[in-house]
Length: 627
Image (cartoon, rainbow, N blue to C red; front, side):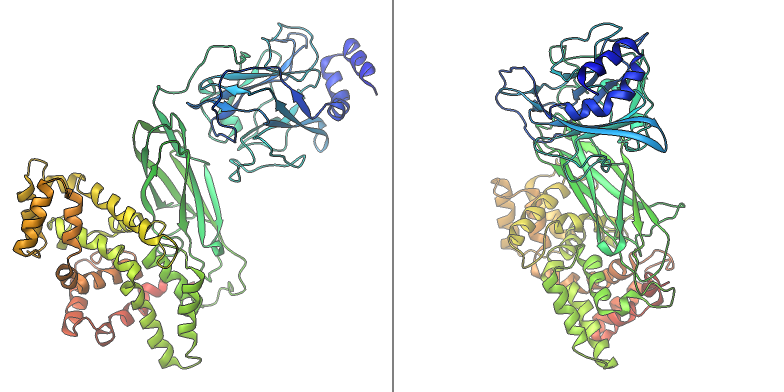
């Protein structure tokens, strides 16, 4: 078959017959590099993949009897707030013909070139023309003309790729693609690749059209694209920006994230679209997905909640969720992810929740026997990194602590002592003392006891939230860990003094001297007169802030010494049992008071008090990882 015979076939037969006969041939002869005659005065624009560029319309029935337009077309849309240069981007198109299972598939990769730029304005469209002209109205002047290459009317997969990216033909990318290779893709009709659920095939008078005029994307083609009257728009058409000027949308990058438990950590992507020129924040949390195949924050993943801070221009943040690799064979388990409380001219998009799926690994020890992962030195050490430092173990530290235990050989007594000392070392480490213990002291130094806050101590989930924020990106011994920690602590303490609970006790109307005095009394009068005098004067002179004064009181050595045993006991509940001391199976602070009395009796000697030993050998701790 040659071009003339293919055109002749089109002239004497229906468009459907033409397409099914000529797809493979035209795909083979189409030049892979298409030049677009466009100009633009814009000089500064993004030239890499941008999550704001979306396939907004697909029309495949051009030229048929009853067709709305003479040609097929694909429309792209910029749902963001910044210019995007798509020069060098490409469409990877797989056209389907026939019927399953005897598909005929033809694929090609079409790259866009222009000189000097191919700019899409915020709220702007780009029109790509396909196919031979036939019945219907003519298209507006296309930005890119790929005629006579057609789109299949029965099914196709259309993948938008950023500059210099390629895919193997017939490849099904993930939705969304976390590698940055795929910007967007649509599968319709009899296509075998699609986001979420396959979209319906267009009709002669209907195009696939993205909802909310192109602004919605939940990574589900069926949900995002509906059959609607075709409305092809090019770069000369009026702009239809998403949302209000100056606003942005924060949402999960996908409806579902998956991890195999022996990977140790799941990475969850959160995206920000729209006007990202200013800073924004959003709170996130993970909860057990009760009752459906629920994962447990005690045994399957590490409690995680906090705040993401988007810097100006930042469009993506990743949340690392620690997962537990136990020795128990089990079905897939689910945890629920949520976003709330966006700030900074940002709102939360429709994908404000997502699912975390934890897959069991094929483990030699997953035999259903009574083996417990914390009976292995490697599992015991790794879990301590999760429970006390809220991070994956660094290779050097992990090897040190494993070797510390394994140096005992088969000596049961020696191994017991080494396990106790290893466990206590995590609480006593510089890293925990300057993260978790500091968070405890900030609460204890500033907030009085209430019915919601018994003993004036942080509750489990708020302690985990704040400790993870302070410890984010910190691993003692790594490069720049002290600078990272300092920035985290400053942010935490400066934010803390503006929390409603804090302001209720220390209202803005309180003058500087009264503020320092009230904090000092709450902390137990830990300041000397000269320290009180100096802090008050520095606060009045603007050399200190409310947050820095709170931090200096919380870091006072005499305050730390006084609170060390109390915090050590509290961390036994938070680290090992993952609960408040008065949560079930306890109903009050009787157990906490018992162990605090023991620690005080033995001057803080955890060995003599047998506190650590009691917790790591307790049924409640061991059941976290038991079959």
